[in-house]
Image (cartoon, rainbow, N blue to C red; front, side, top):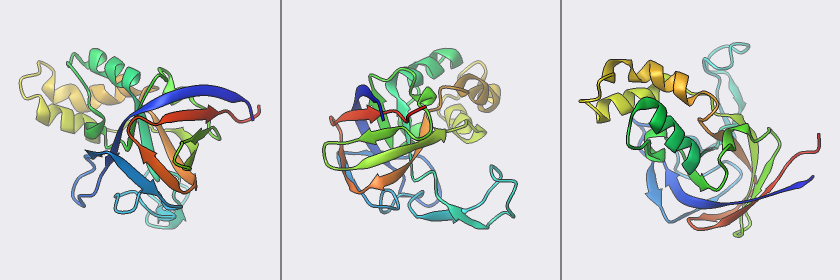
Length: 187
């Protein structure tokens, strides 16, 4: 597996409120094989939804979305594309904000992210954008000239920039400021 370089954890976030996906910043988390304990996406399995039409809705399937990560650079590109000053990772429900990886979303499935606190995460692929974060952006920017269109525009602008979903391969600690080593799968 070839070594691809490093990036830095700019923020660690958790979504602990049952009625919203919006996450909040913390200094560090201990991940287990189900993800971040207490986070809304924690678990070894999850119910199938609209993104898995091959299974009846609600069927238990492996949880490939235990964590999600976005990059500082891609959030800035989304904000620019929407005419906003910023798009914060909290508004996207992200668990990790990474800096120094401007094309995070292009990281291939199977890439490993290794943290100094022992945690190892596996990229499961792109986190495809949906309208929910766009609805949050519209609510937070009531004076935006395209406010009503922000949910749909978010999906368009965030495509290929929305970050990645990850699963935990090795439990451990993830903290703000960590230097993350990235290993790519053999092609």
